[in-house]
Length: 250
Image 1 (cartoon, rainbow, N blue to C red):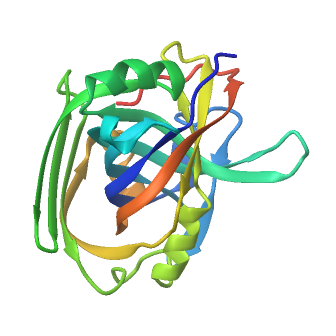
Image 2 (cartoon, rainbow, N blue to C red):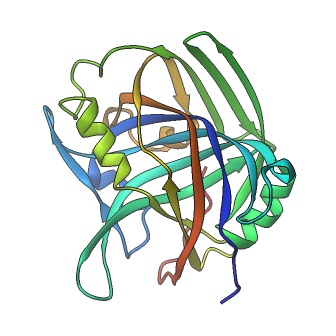
């Protein structure tokens, strides 16, 4: 197993756009090890998937000064999952079928260390309490668009009763697994934050082409959350071999 350093930096801005998904439609996407981590909402049991749109600043191997760190925009497509650990205990985290980054360095080094990173172009506008983001990958076949503004609570009909419940769900999803470029292994990484605090966002419009592969009535926008200015580390975790090769996220 290749040694991978821990990386230190700042989450300058993180938007979590979340969809409620009928669990059974995720079977073709999830590796055999995982099952959806569901929430019992008003319309029944739902899985949670979405996109983490995150700007990272001062990113560098832990121990180096912040001045040498780099800044990048990134998007991770995520699905909340559970699995059984070697000790038989249930673990929770996220399966990340696809990561995109504005950084050419991240797309090369990240792919070797934390799972495949595709290069993409990002356009981001932040105006007071409003956030607009557009991402399109180099092949022009994966797109993310978000237009959101700060608000006081979750939308009516959310699977979560309140912001605290939504926050707790995502805080338990700190460990993520992403396919390696060969698709036969899952690289693990844990996001360890210095603190955890989220605020709700009201979404004016959203598009995530990855989730359009599922039946339209099986995927519903649920909520969006915002995190800002939080110190953090990306800590490598054990990787796994997968029996069923994973396909690239589209």
